[in-house]
Length: 89
Image 1: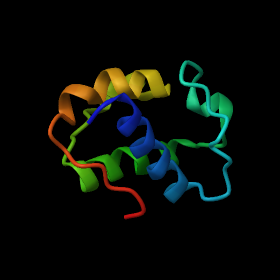
Image 2: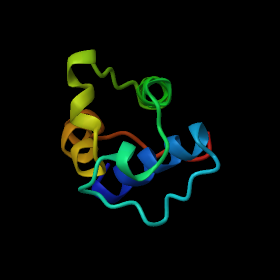
Image 3: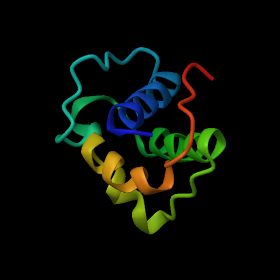
Image 4: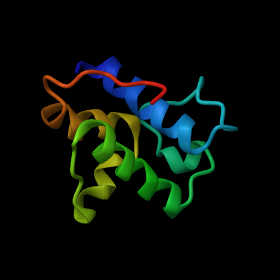
C-alpha cells in the first residue's frame, strides 16, 4: 500500500469505530486524539481492526507510533506492503 492508501485505511477504521466524527479535515501531523474524540478503548479498537483487516500486529510498546496519520504511515508502510486496501469492511 502507498501513503494515501494507508491514510484511507486508517480513516476508514476510525470511521467504523467513531461514525459521528468528521474526518475530512484531519491533519496528518497532529495527534489524532487532539483532533477527534478517541478514548483509549477506541484506540485499542483501531489496533484490533488493523490486525483483523490486514494481519498487522502492533505491540503495545509501539502504540505511540500511531498517534498521528504521518506516524501511522511511517510505522505501517513496511507491514502493509503487498496488502490490498479494504474499506467499508
